[in-house]
Image (cartoon, rainbow, N blue to C red):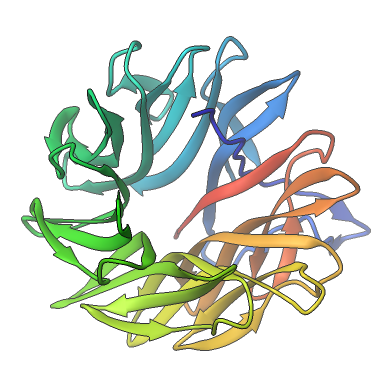
Length: 339
């Protein structure tokens, strides 16, 4: 499995004393917008993150490396990602710019999500065993297996609430793909066997769990989320749509993803309590991959494909902000906003 090119970044420009489309807005109390991913440079993906436009490089061009998720705790930046060493993928994370490998260089593994609780760092992903990929998370570098290796199983999102660890993911078996979540390693199926469902992200609010994902129906997919185990559809089988990220703010449920329009162009969007809010106009292929809410403002990270180049971008309350130089392929995978 080769490493996907992923990137997130922020650039800031000023023109004639007014904000340009590339300048993030800042409130009276300064906001810190962290974005992370990877940018394709000279044929290799370079892991990096930006804080309000200031770039921090986490890898060189020896191996392709990218960030899949970011967490920020008391000013420390934790980034989860994957490195491709020419033979296999290695799961890893960074504490600020210190690289910490989670799997041997001879195995094949991916890290997809990260959470920090007090002084503990949790990274979720999958690692190849003798016959298949096993879903697992690592707590401070120590692996915790979530599956038995009978089928390919992947952990995609992670959340920690008190002493409880929640992971969203899916199992590919002979009958299809079963979306599920794990609470402290105990699996809870979200879909029935014989269908194709995928759980991609998870959030916890009080006693309730929220899981974002999608289901394949024929040649299309349906964006959806589950509240606890109850499915809530965000689209129907007439189009191709996926949900990849979820965030709970107060009583509101926000889900980020995309949906193809009638011309088969991917439109980036998010859903607030089930109501779709488009972020792009359908002129270009665009996608939303991460979402964060702070002070009522909605931040969504994603990308746009234009003239053969994939451009990293994010939206704040629907206003787009392009990031990076635009000379290299880049996409956004994660966004965190701190005040």
